Length: 285
Image (cartoon, rainbow, N blue to C red; front, side, top):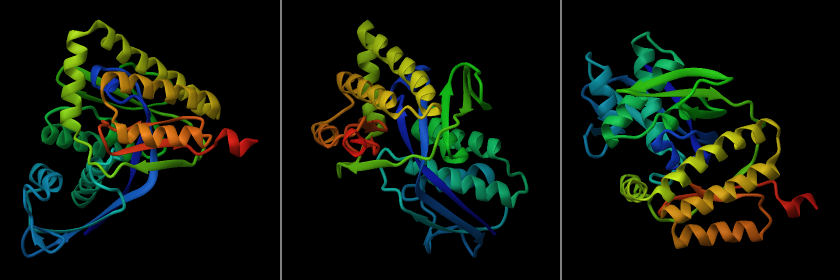
């Protein structure tokens, strides 16, 4: 038997740029997913026979990592699905953590690597950002170069990513939900087409990477004003790339009018959620 509880995530700066090898800055949040795995009479999830469509990530993890007796999996989640808050990464990471613990081969690095492999296979692409922050917690910077705070390296084919710890203070983040499920593959494909045929769009993804690096320094220095400014610029870029939506823009503008230092979409966009720095101009006056 094994039990795991892992956090969801918010990307502060880096959506879509990370697809093209640009740095990405993310933090774990206190919405969590839990998984409990024990021996069962058959492979089942929450009392139902395990199904590849309903329990996609769990089944992929078990098929890849387990070759022993049947398992009964129980899950709970405080993270809404398709919200941009890392629900698929969290359920994958929690399942992998349990399986590796049962096999006596648990380590955070191994959990992060195996979880990324599973998400990559299910989603037919992606980066290890979400699975790494769900595994590690706290705040991380994903980049194509090794820097201070290096934790582990993950590779896929010729691509290499380096995950770094960011010494971030505890912070309050307000998350607003549009009520519209984010369709990550569709949004990634849409932006990819724009980037492929536009040098301007490629420059925008590079700017996202620069903002992520600068934002990591702001986080370390507890400079939430500067971090908020970079979040706002990042959102403007994501809007230009076509990743935002009227519903997201409405929430973001309301947050800024209320005095937030920064507000932007989190995840692929098109729906899902937005996040804002709760520390605000009005609160500080």
